[in-house]
Length: 344
Image (tube, rainbow, N blue to C red; front, side):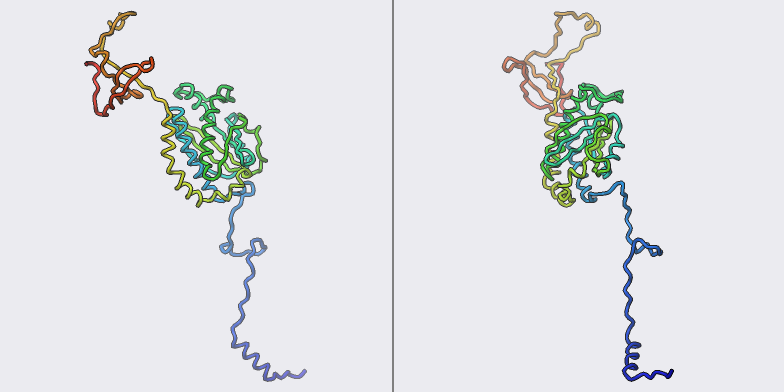
C-alpha cells in the first residue's frame, strides 16, 4: 500500500491544532452513592435520624423557646402571688421527638392534662410532675412543704379540684404568651394520671416538647408542654426568629415588670395594730383569771403602731367606721425610726 501524501490544507490543520490550547474536560457530577472511593471532604454530608425527623427549623424552635420563656416568667409571678411564696419557672429544653418517645419519658402516675386550643385543630398536652403537684397542694392547704411525702398514686378528687385552679392560671398565662403570634383560647380538657392511656396523635407523629423546671422553696420538679406539629402547622411560617424579636421589643419585655406588679398586687398581707406593750412576771401570768385587768401606761386614745407582715410601717388612730372597728393611718414610719409603745 503506497504512502498517503498530505495536501496543504491537511498540513495547515495540523499546525493549528498544535498551537491552540487543549479543551478542558468537564468534571463529572459529584455522586453521593458510588462503588468507587472519592474524597469525602468535597461532599457535604449531614446526619439525619429517620426516627426523629425535624419538621421545624432551628430559628422556629428558638422562637418557640423564647415565647415560652415569657410564659414561664409570667407563670412564676402568678404562682408566687397565689401561693404567697417565691416560685421560679424557667425553660429547661425545647426539642422535637415522636409522640411515643414523649409518652415513654413520663412517669406513671403523673398529672397529664389535655388542653383544647381553638381555633387550632387538635389538642396539646400539659404534664406536671408529682414533685410539683403535691408541694403546691400542700401549700394551698396551709402546709410548709417541710418533710413532705410525695405519694405514688393518682390524685384524689379533692386534689384534682385544687390543682385545676393552678392549671387555669397556667393556661391563662399561656394564652397571653401566644397573643403575639395569634389569639388562642387555651381551655382545660380531660385529666389523666396514666399518660399511656392517652393518644392524641399517632405514635410516630412529630411533636414539639417544651420542658420547664419549677422551683418552690426547697422543692423542684419538671413540667412539660407537648405540642403536636399538626396543631401548630398553620402558624409555623409566623414562628420566625426575626418577627419574634420585633414583637418582644415592642410589646413583650416592656410589660414584664407591669405583669409581675399586677400579680403581686393581688397578694393578701396580714395587718396587726398594737396600742401598748407592758411586762409582767411569770407568776403574775400564772395567776391571771377571767376579769383581771392589765394596766398599761398609754391612754386608749394614743396612736397605735400598724405592722404589715410583722414589720411596723404606719402610725394610726383607733376608731369606728359603719359600726366596725377601724384604723385611720396618720403617717408612715421611717425605717430607722424607733417606736416605743411602753409609754405615753
